[in-house]
Length: 280
Image (cartoon, rainbow, N blue to C red):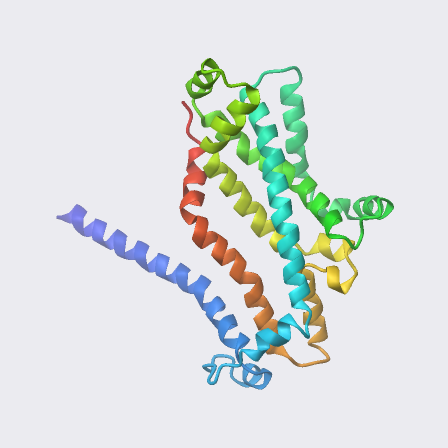
């Protein structure tokens, strides 16, 4: 009886903590959503007032006049191509590190992983000089190359355990059936590592979609800026043109794709966070 009561108390406390955490996460989003469909006067005088009537023109202003439409398009292009490239290249490297033996394997692996030790800010000056000499400033292709390079170390690091967790017997069976190295990888190993690939893609999506510093340094042309940089410019413009509704609308525009990705792939993401820790 005592253990049952203690269990009920523990469950109640856990539920209270979860509800409190949900409130901390959800309430700011609701507040931003309300302010995104209100005029600037209402936002300043009563930020918690219900948006009646809602002013969806803020989204039109943010997309057009504030230039966030260009930013959204550029971020979508850069993020999509970068993720496909990152996951494709990293999966090949992670498979080699996980399943094959060769000289200097550990040295080469730790050389890749060492990239996680260097903060982005340290490389800003040489990075700008390099990209500028290559003529890739103010270009989406330049951003894609930089984002891909920066993300390889992290992605290889999280994908290698996934390939190690796949039983060797499956790979051996495929070889016995006549599959070559590339067939084994693309037809057998890659589908089995799908939870890890989805997890890596989601983590990289969030990181690249919200990245600000590299985009700010490498892109100065207004029509080539990514969404975070365009939002930063809008915040500076707000000082001279009071349009807080458009600013909050832009924030909602930047949040929605991340929420959609999580809602679509939440099951695979949960599976991906644990499957890499299991070995044969």
